[in-house]
Length: 282
Ligand code: PAF
Image (cartoon, rainbow, N blue to C red; front, side, top):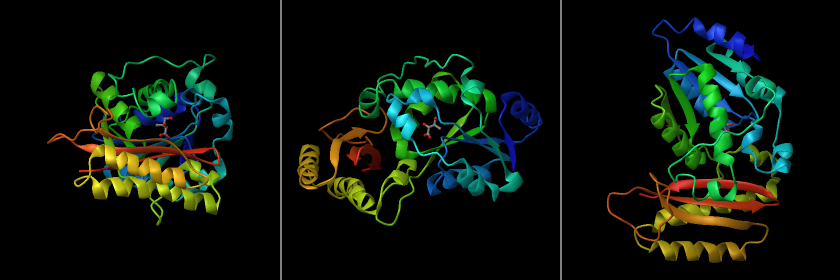
């Protein structure tokens, strides 16, 4: 597996593919890889001529310095995980300076309201930080396809909007959330949970399943109040939000309209570890 730390070496190598029919697939990550990431890599390998995986812990998308410091990092394990792909993929692991130069600055973007609720309102400036680095990585890798997980559905929608607004010729490929057998969505942050916390964390998926199973028979307000009440009774978990929003604009709603696709979104903290998840409802 070829590994590049510098932009110039990576772009020089990728230039080989620019004139041909070759398709570049791109899987941007922040490392601490799990089965969810692997499913994106597998999908990219199936669809593309060459796959680039980046591992870059992007400082500008963390609104809380403590959260950044505590983010799980295990470069050796990540390297071992990807090594099995051998020459099917290229690993890009830049330093902060390589991406941002001497000025680690978050750019400002307009997301047409997609960032108004959920992670956008809970984590100030988070999506500006995400798109600052995604824009930079797209400029460097120039992918034909870029693969993102539905677990971060709001991020996925914002990236789709960004690509559309800029008329970039990159196809964003949505990838299904990978879950452990009790439903817990795979996330790098799960590495911070012990077994009993993981058990408590499975309540996020239970709440989403309740919403999906009852979406046709209950009012949205009934679903929400039911879940809020359930969470008040579970110890060791603090619900930050549970809401239902349309998939396209991501505006929370209490009313169902015909022909609109809805999703339930949840964020909760267990032992100070913040987890998010979502599910499609119809
Ligand atoms: O989803 C992530 O891991 C990150 O937000 C991303 C897209 C790699 C940008 O840093």
